[in-house]
Image 1 (tube, rainbow, N blue to C red):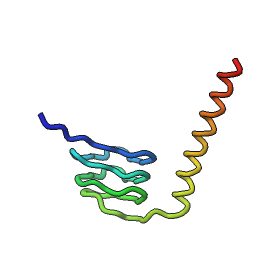
Image 2: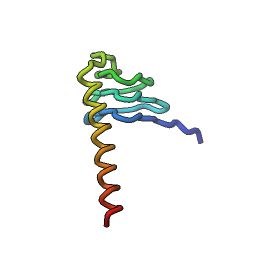
Image 3: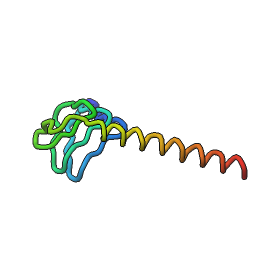
Image 4: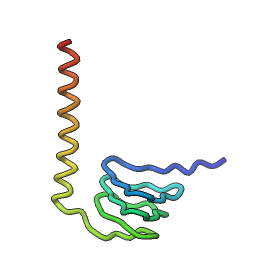
Length: 88
């Protein structure tokens, strides 16, 4: 039996009915549109759609700032939860 590991890195968005083939890596922050088919590994930080997928948009600063905001927000929530647990 051969292992065909699929890797989806952090902060990716995969829409409804996306097919991801064997041995595919989806890079950090990639966005894949609905009903797309990913047969080859794709780099992060870009928007893809189609079957097979094609890059349809480069990463923009607004998207990068949004991902950074989500990361910081999750870290703040984790820190707040830890402090609450310590005080109890």
